[in-house]
Image (cartoon, rainbow, N blue to C red; front, side, top):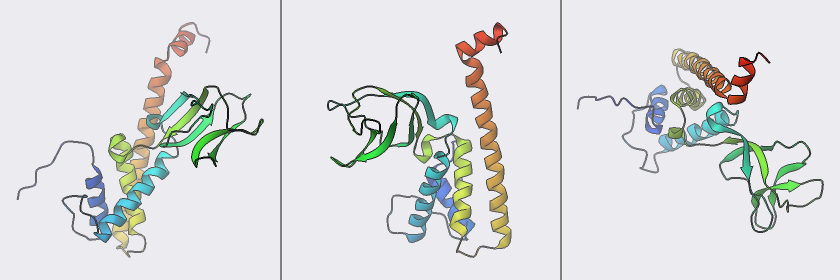
Length: 202
């Protein structure tokens, strides 16, 4: 069967197959079949690496001053896919804790020793997204990093391991380059910043 490339960003299947090939295993056609140990292990490593890299906080998976509103009981829940939620108001002393009432992640008011806050909390949030919901540069770096971790303990050839390590660094540099470009674009497109530059305030 002739190989027909798909001109789309890297998929989770692509990433897993890249990891399998790095240790000399044959690629698979689908990830829906459970119970294939090497595939399951590769997916687990990819998922853990995804969470680790996204946890650093990038322009594409962070929101500033994101509002979280209290529920009918006055408690402010933290979204399930939030890796980090940092309240921005300095006068508040809110921290993340698991509410013993129902084991949900919520903000806890340390000053008043209560989960009842009864006001909107604005946070800088770092989100956890699925692999195929992030930019290609991030996918490429995560796949390479996961591939190197996957190789540990499998005794790959030194040449393959070194190549993977070098590719991981290259993809990180590209991701950082795109991050700087994205942040610069957002900075100069912000109305208040544009006005200050125009009036030579900064």
